[in-house]
Length: 598
Ligand code: GTP
Image 1: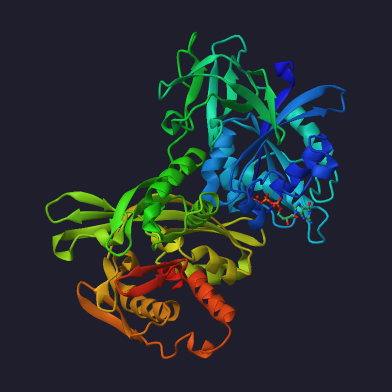
Image 2: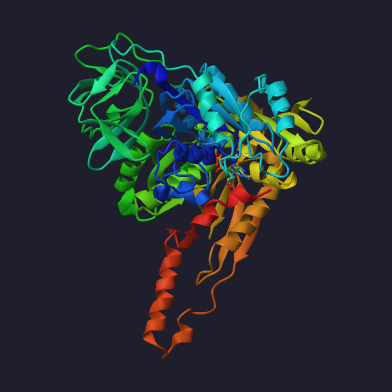
């Protein structure tokens, strides 16, 4: 198809404003997916996405649209996640597009991630097509929201389509707006190949599948290609697009978004953000890649079965291919043995990776308490970075510790301003500013320790504002704090994987909470287990887990053998996510106890 008839766009929005639903309607309207194959949120292809009702991975599909002017257009639609943990996926998709459809919920209006995503789109010089969604809702105020977009973002909304992605009302207007407003891709099809790798995936049969946006030139089956960063060369075996099923093609041309396979078995040859060119007539320069994302939270992942250590490494390497923001390196814990220290963009990201490893690679894991990176200044003048509380140097050797702060922006209805400020204050927030958005809403700005915000801040924010607040944050700087390491002792032994770093003022409170929580989470054993919290060898809190009195099998004495077996089976099930540390069995939940404390 003529390049002037190609349109590449992303759909961006605050979480739950209806991106995936709009994508479904667009696929239907363009007859891309047959009716009988259609299901809700079809682009959320991972089981995990369907179950949780959220988008985690970006997804690119090709569709053809016959516009009202009678001409046919080739669209590439890239669906993106809305949660702040996955903004890295958003920024990558945007680099593959010329336009972005901005979906705003007519009942909710502009929210924190609406703004954050608009800024990302503007950074990528994208044309933004505003769309007001959910106008079928009784609480919808499309005109108010239009004005809000004009006032806050400065986008002209006079012709913005007003739609219901749910019922399909006016969705065609969105497609027409894309044709009219989004510019076609610019590159020259006759120039040397430049294909931006924006995602990749490992397929056990075909090797690495690289998802690419062709910025210049073309690539065909049989071509010899070169990855410009890794210098690896391969012969192309297959190229194609997705609609969303895979469709093979002979060639991908400038402006198209598709995939390439070349029997690539060495995962390290492919990096998201790299440029693929033609080995025989290479491009002079690689395309600008992506800004590297630095993880915000770290935790240790340990296989429950130590024999699965190598499988875990393999799984992490393959997942990294599909999720470039994941980082990991080997680590050992006295309590848990060999595992990996992994870096994530947030807790949801951590949760998703952990679940993917368990589901897709069948490895049962224990994850340790999450931590941020601390800058520890030693008395000899050097600074070290610590992402694992167990490795915090002794207080005598430490001059001072700095922790990462974020700039948080919270949009909230006026009635909840007091509650939000109280919460921020409690989380050691430093008040910065407050701006009026409109008659009903305020934008509150705080600087807060990342260590406080990533844990359960978001849930608390939602509950103290009845779900009305929206949050966005970005890293600001490191600031000095009075932090100490709190160790947990079970049966008199320090369990390194349970150590956390806390602010000294909160230490006693947290120590108490943590020991109580562990008491509830760790099952009773045949003996009594003292649970203690200590700072620098000094015990600050203590409780006991009483010993077991009853034998689970006692009841079955003389009873039916199958019942006995069942009981033992059940016990085994329960043990699946437990790790023996010394003589104590610790369940997974115990390592996450720190997340649900005040
Ligand atoms: P993430 O993928 O998690 O970022 O969310 P999303 O923006 O893709 O939102 P999604 O499409 O999953 O929609 C969120 C919820 O809003 C779902 O329950 C949809 O059924 C509902 N929804 C979407 N569009 C409309 C609409 O036009 N009207 C009404 N009433 N509900 C809608």
